[in-house]
Amino acid sequence: MIQAPDLPLWAALIVGIFVLLGASITLIGAVGLIRLGSFYDRVHAPTLGPTLGTTCILVASITCFSVLQSRPVIHEILILVFVTGTTPVTLMLLARAALYRDRRAGSTDVPND
Image (cartoon, rainbow, N blue to C red; front, side, top):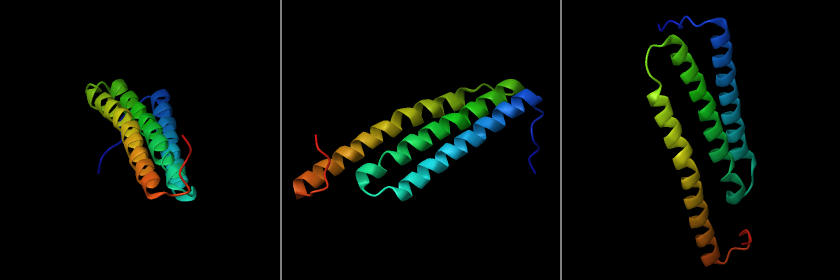
């Protein structure tokens, strides 16, 4: 079994708050994916929620390992850069491809320019 790190109380509170906040935001994004109707509405919820949720969880990880001074936080910073860089690009590519496909097919539920 993995033992919990010996964090000071202030650091444990910060880590706990950011982990709960990140998990809550990611859950809200997942619920938004289920609740929203069309593809164009749904495309925002799974990109904005998990990006901010991942950022909060990475801040918690950076805080934990910075306080423990057990290793540098380069891994978390690289994850943050790649997640926040690739998620919006993927969103734009998916939305533009769907928009192009729906306009070519003559669909009526296509958003205006």
